[in-house]
Length: 163
Ligand SMILES: Nc1ccn([C@@H]2O[C@H](COP(=O)(O)O)[C@@H](O)[C@H]2O)c(=O)n1
Ligand SMILES: C[C@@]1(CO)OP(=O)(O)OP(=O)(O)OC[C@H]1O
Image (cartoon, rainbow, N blue to C red; front, side, top):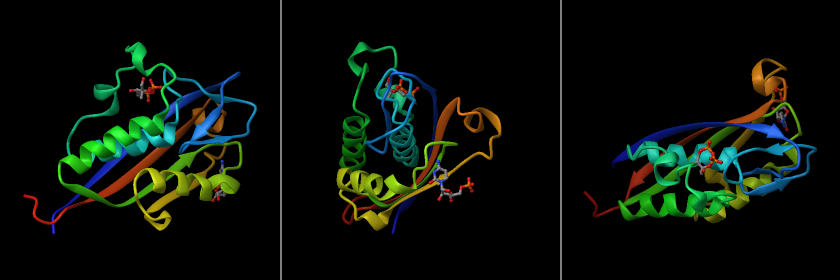
C-alpha cells in the first residue's frame, strides 16, 4: 500500500468588519480574519497539507493572492479543486488532523459542525477529520489575538490499480 503524508500551516490577521470562517463554518465573534479570500485559515492549512503530500506546491501557486479572481473566494470551493487534483492523481484521503490556535472565541461548540462540513466536502466520515483547538496561552501573535493560526496533516492512500 502506497501512502503519503502532508502538512500545512497558515495564519491570518484578525480585524473588524469581517466574518470569522473556520473550516467553512461562520463563527460568531467580534473580529474576523483578514485576507484576499475568505481567509479560512483552517481550510487553507488542509489544502496545503493535501498539496504537500503529493509535492504539488502550495495554494498560492493555484490561487495567487494577486489574482482578483480569488478576491472573497469561498475556501471550501478552493478545497474542492485541490481535492479533485488529489483524486485525479489516483489518491484517496486516509485521514486529516488539524489544530486551530486561537485565544478566542471558544471553538469547542463549533468543532463538530466544522468536522462535518469538511468531511462532507472531502467525502469522508467525520471520524476521518480531526480538529482540535488550543489557545497560545496569551503568548505571541495568536496569544495577543492579532491572528488565528492552523496546522494540518493529511494521510493519502493510493487507490488500487494506480501506479
Ligand atoms: N479557541 C479555543 C481554544 C481552546 N479551546 C478548548 O479549550 C481547551 C483548553 O485550551 P488551552 O489552550 O487552555 O489548553 C482546549 O483543549 C480546547 O478544547 C477552545 O474550545 N477554543
Ligand atoms: C487562497 C488565497 C487566495 O488569495 O487566500 P488568501 O486569503 O490570500 O490567504 P493566504 O493564506 O495568505 O494565501 C493563500 C491564497 O492563495
